[in-house]
Length: 195
Image (cartoon, rainbow, N blue to C red; front, side):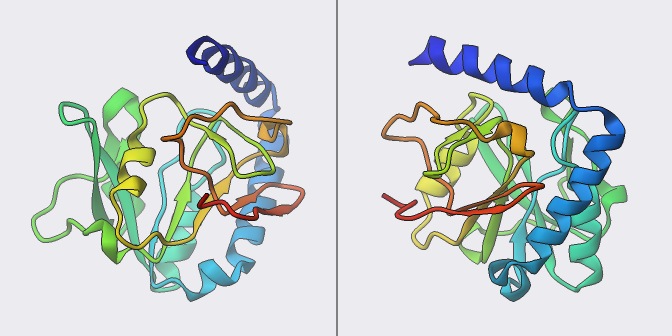
C-alpha cells in the first residue's frame, strides 16, 4: 500500500500543480464561500485551520475571514521529534513563519497553546480524497494521530480542488476519514466517516 500511496500522491500533486494560478484563485474563492456557508463552520467558535503551502487551496483568506468573524483560530505546529502536532491560537496571519518543511506555522507563544479537546471543527489539508471520506495526506500521519487521540471528535472538513477528488483513496485501519469535503464545485457529504 505504501508504494501505491506514494505513486498516487505524486500523480495528484502533479495535477494540482498544473492548475493555472488565475484558475486556482477563482477556485479558492469558491471553496472559501462554500466552507463559510457550512453550518459546522458558522457554529464553531474554535476552528483548527492550516496555513496553505505551495499549490494547496489558499487558506490564508479563510484564516483572515475567521479572525474577522471573531472565531478562535487554531493552527498546527509540527513537533517533528515527537511526530505530533501542537496547536496554537493565532490573532493574525502575520504571526506565521516558515516551519517544518517550510510550511507556515504559528510561533510558540506562552498561553496560546490550545488543547485538542477545545476544537469545535477541524479543517484539514490533504493530497487526495474520495467520496467515502478517504484522505491521502502527505505521509506523516500527523492529523491521524492527533484525531485518534481525541476523546470527542469534532467535525472533520477537508478543503480541496475538484481535481483532488479521485475514485478511491487507499486507506489503512489507522487512516482517519473526513466528514465533508469542500471543493470548488460541491460539498461532498460523507456517510459513516467515523467508521
